[in-house]
Amino acid sequence: MAVIAHRGLRGLPDESQTIDATASVINRCDFASYQNSLATGAEERARSRQHPKGKKTARERIALFVDPDSFTEFGQFQGGNMAHGFSGAAVVTGIGRVAGDPVAVYAQDFSIAGGTLGEVEGDKIIALMDRALELRIPIIAMLDSGGARIQEGVVALSQYGRIFRKTCQASGVIPQISVIMGPCAGGAVYCPALTDFIVMTRENSHMFVTGPEVVRATTGESVSFEDLGGAAVHNFQSGVAHYLAEDEEDALDYTRTLLTYLPPNCDGPARVWDYEEGEDDAVAAASLSAVVPEESKQPYDMVDVIRHLVDYGEFVQVQEFFAPSIVVGFACMNGQSVGIVANQPLHDAGTLDVDASEKAGRFVQFCDAFNVPIVTLVDVPGYRPGTEQEQAGIIRRGAKLIWAYANATVPLVTVILRKAYGGAYIVMGSKSIGGDINFAWPGAQIAVLGADGAVAIVGRSKLAAAKEAGQDVEALRRELAATYTRENVNPYLSVARGELDAIITPENTRSTIVSALRILRSKDRSHPGSRRHGNMPM
Image (cartoon, rainbow, N blue to C red; front, side, top):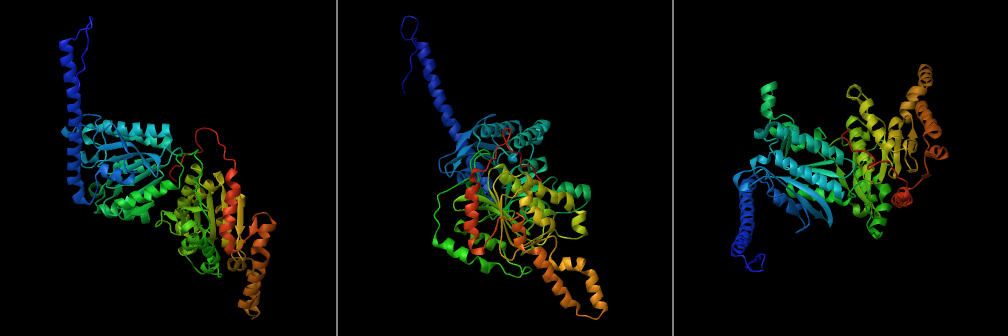
């Protein structure tokens, strides 16, 4: 090892300074080795605690998520010596790359103090979020924590408050995705709740504000972790989660996939890749009419329709199991990333209810915040009727979908496949609410009511008179329905009124949408301030 000699005033070596400098270099080398040994030992202990539970360590998760050798960790030893249990080690923070693009990542380490959040952990997370905002890159949170560190009391609670505030500041500016890989309880659940997407693993992830023991003590109800806040509950019932992953690898793979459809920030251009139309695209387009039955009441799977329209048939659903009467997700059309919103006739005839309205509304709002064009595929008989929906707040909650479409500034392309009735027609990307280019298939029915419902109201007196006279009531009902359809439901009437831009065949649907999106690429989306709006929970 080279010895650095400090020279005195006369240019001669100062022996005491030489010895001190040598010791300093040796100490620095020893400290670096000491740090490495601490990190290695801590990772080994983490593996021994996490692997038996079927869980990976924080650093293993990050390595699995980012591109190889692309992660730079920040503040690894901030707050003290993690070998002796000092604070700061329960979270790993840094910046890596996914498919070559930079992302900010933090992962809680349950093997250290249960992954709990203390003052230093909070400081590390907030510092990373500040860095992500400066660089305008997405934030990915891998959560596996027992919550606030009890020993630090109000200090730990205050750190959650600061994280909440910073998450809100980042909302609508940069994409934020939370991956739940263990417990997430108490006030800590609002960290992911404020982000854009939540991914949960089937076996180990749980989210709840109050745990089973507190529930039992306060209400007397006995409930398991899984029934209270497991992944199935939040994917099928509450709508809190956006994807149900089979395991950690699946969760991280889905998160990487989501990022490929999104720009790094609200001012980034929509994602576009080189794409050449192939024979498969032509075959899929040609067979589309066979997927959708002509009979308006016969169900079919809208996901099959989507796969016939998009590149490679690849469609990434969001909230697949929640509010299944509407389908939302990401795909590409001729290389351009798009968000798709579509009614699902396979479930409840594709009607809109409170959950479907909120699900679609928040997705539309997210796409608008991050410059993702929206393609809307419509086949909707209306809002779901009944006292249950009215009492659940369909007026208030259904209005959220209206707000989302009416305020959207991204390109909006809408296609009506079979029917669009009443208020549901209006809110599903209609021209009147802000749709840029709107189409319908031949035979599509657009009206206040379907023929059967309309005849029951406007033809009531004629039907009653026919019954009294002993005439064929059903024949009259069919005649009145045919007349109503011809005069009020015909899509060509909407074309004449300017509410539709054209009637297109099913076979030309893909090429027509692609052309419309190409036209709308230069749409003016200017907005005041640093962002369009936040993607607030709806």
